[in-house]
Length: 131
Ligand SMILES: [Zn+2]
Image (cartoon, rainbow, N blue to C red; front, side, top):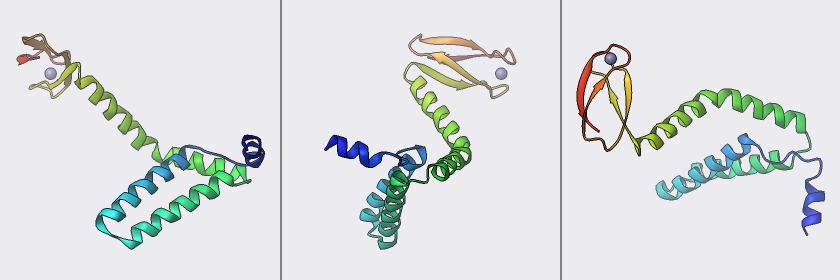
């Protein structure tokens, strides 16, 4: 069975970032279509699923690769912003993020130090916050 699968996938494109995006979008649309009972959303979700299957089993590897590169280029800003946001959320567990009242610079302060005086590294203004 495993051998058969490997043989079947030989020379076929397989998975990539664009396909992962398509499957996530498909799942979200499927769930949404159930909540709002939208037939159109359901068909779009199925269309995305079919497109993803088509890309996975496609033998036109250069073309699929080019599509993925295009997707990566188009989504790079979003993915970068997302990664930044995620990193910020992770830091919130151990740090507070304050904005300097003088210059609005974001300042990261470790949590659990009680009331502390913070000096802005940019404009040297100091302010008191609870960490
Ligand atoms: Zn400042």
